Length: 176
Image (cartoon, rainbow, N blue to C red; front, top):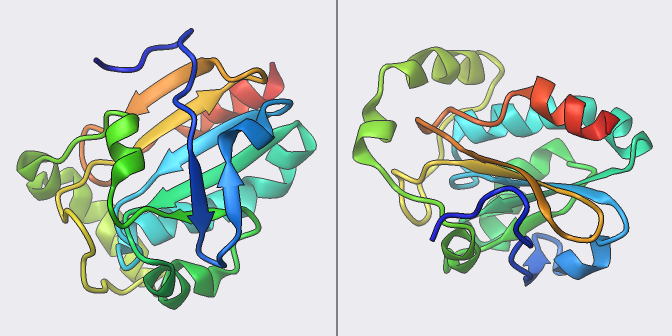
């Protein structure tokens, strides 16, 4: 069953790439942007994290906590995404159990789609070079905006592997 706005976000406890425990319940008094990515060496994902880092301070000031999930081990996250020194937790989910809880899919079509090429070129121009995939290379990202108290305000499943929730939707959520 797909998650829809108004439902409670599935609870979880995970470990971030630095070994610290993270529980969704610990963020119940604030808004949460839960962003699911592919693997730590994915240049498309690293570009998106870069863009989130640039917006992070403004989001935090408006009461939004960012939690990111990668299907990689903490060691792989440290080798790739961690080099950007993200100011928010990056959760390691190498068993992809959180992806299952949140109904994220894999798709060869979404992986091979030509829309990914422009984002891939931008990512590589920024210096994000592909690393070896962990988990499903065809994983499609997803984003979940969660209200204080834990209900889903917005659910976004990417159409292709470079597709994430538009920043204007996140900004509108932060402003409510």
